[in-house]
Length: 417
Image (cartoon, rainbow, N blue to C red):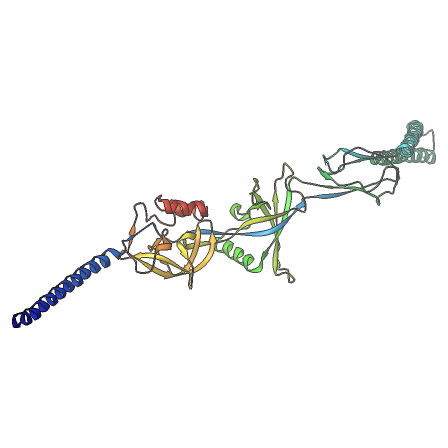
């Protein structure tokens, strides 16, 4: 009985020791497992493309709404009085300078021409007679056969008839002009409007408008610059020491409503010297070829114009910029991503201008921004680091040329281009 009581406590102690040993092994195993997991959760460096920024010259462009206007608009007005007999063109069609548009009743004017011709013939006959008398009288006077008074009278008659011939010739020419005006011709090449007078109506000289012709090649594009842009453009010209005749300054691009670029370059040929106090703008005019009559008068277009040149600008591609509480870019410092707050300038073909926050030589990250945080390790991929002053050909296409072709970088470039 005593042996049984003694053996029971000894068995309980052994069981308790086994439980403690098992718990210790479990805790140790859990400790080793947690350490491995923590080590495996440490993120690897994020592969990124970068762009080394460098100050360079950047042209700043802006677009302004405008309207197409015919270079010339001619109002065709009858220059003689008469009944409108015929029309020789299709309304709304293109006519060329000298084409016959209308015919006014010619019979009265033809009769006047005939009368003036007869009057001229009579004046010439009278002049021939007085010319012969004058020649005879002059010879007789030299031979002392006629008096001074007879000589003077013969000379006076000759000169009077000579003037009468000139008057008759002028009257005939005037009548011919009026007869020619009965055939109304196009004064310029352009597109015609609807006729303003019906056939058979009476046309009053220098009063009745028959139609309107608008020249379509070339055409004008009228647009306006806000006051600030106008001053920026003038300042840029002054800094570059260039006159308004500079080709690059005068060039303009016409953009159609569809977004397509018109194939012919425009030239700014007029800039208003004063600011409109009502609108706060400066009016400009550009002239552009329009051989296929694509730009119809009154059509809405946009005019793209260089307004400024920044000599020492730093630019980055749009995809290198991230928003949020502040506008920032990531730069590589000591192998890690460093978020830098930046201030944006104008958006250009060569990228977004950064006016504050970046310096020459900074290595800006241009891909993988969605997975980045400040202080995270990064791995710069091969092909990165090209300077931002290389030719770009587009805000993002240029940036993609500055980095190597990876799947993420190429996709970003294709989406933004």
